[in-house]
Amino acid sequence: MELLAIGGRSLRKEAVLTFEQRSEIEANRQKNLQSLRHHKVVSQSEWTKARLALLEEEKRMMKQQDALAAKKRALPWVKVEKKYVFETRDGKKTLAELFGRLN
Image (tube, rainbow, N blue to C red; front, top):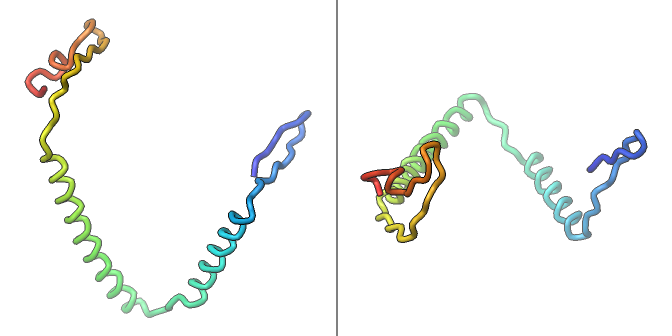
């Protein structure tokens, strides 16, 4: 919803949704309500057991993500053929001048 100020007054401008958008919103709302109706309620000890199991899964996935990130960092670099020049406080500098031995 958007507010428009006209002559010192605020008027609401309702968002115009297509039939498909309204249908999708309603389907998602029904799905969420269904999930709430059938959501399992357990004791604190059962919840803790389930949460610890989920935590172990999260840790495994984080280790996998870390390993993937390490592989990405290990990819070879591509030589930059174009001669870039940058304006600095000390005047114009090339990549070689900015990064020295790292280029």
